[in-house]
Length: 388
Picture (cartoon, rainbow, N blue to C red):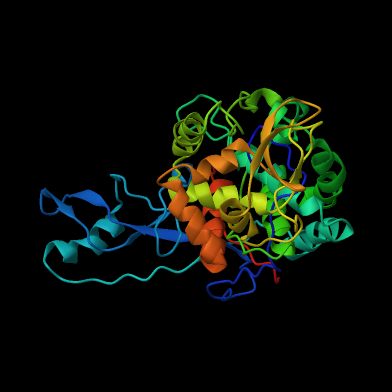
């Protein structure tokens, strides 16, 4: 997960089930759906000549470019902006201005252009992992690093929308050491197989992270399709946006995680700890990240063991022989300085304890935070069915 570490493995859940809100009403409809999120919209009432506030949940297609504005109940993206409404929307909202309660129910919208057999794509990803379980954490790391470059206030915003991590220029970033085989050997044949049906690298990479988690016993991460690949490496984000494993002290490292990385992407402290739990899977390699060893004794099975070990194991500072980097060891297991730093922070530490004592809560929070991460910088995503 963190930039300075090369985790050849990282997280996983069971087989996914993406359930359609309701089946298509006709054969002309496909399995593609766009979930519409509700929002409170302010508009100018032309009929009344004044501004009124609609309490109804007028539907607007989600705008994932503001992917950090989540509705806690539906986990949809909320749209809360001033909008110019058409005549039908104004008429629909007018009863509210007169004190009349109106309840609107929105239905999923189906589009016919998606011809990608998502169930088959997912099965092919699962086969990659079944051939070697250690690939699951690596696919998660690839999806994480593809998405974690998001920086909304820059010209090249990064994030998962463009799938730029497939380019050699981004794979060459230090934080991405060891990820080239995942792109060029494991995913490339799947992309080629479904390219004519419109499969985008950006969707394949993020879905790979979802399947990596699912196949190793972790939670099902909500996932939507619709990303659009960059046409050239010109859109590769600059190096240095991913989390570092060590900034010299626990205080400096925690400040880096908050202010320079996660807050930039719209995450909060709970999200930071939840996403750090990806380290329950995989291991570091000195020749890639400069660190060495697995975080847990079950690097290809997702549990809350990472948090249990953070609290209960006796971690001793040590140096990696090949690189001289500082890490913490407990027998054959290791933790990065950024891992131990979580236990030294008055806000992070209670969340670590909560996850150490309740795996279900950790899984729930991880799935939500990872879904949000994988949608950073995206637009016009839609739901798919893996059962079609």
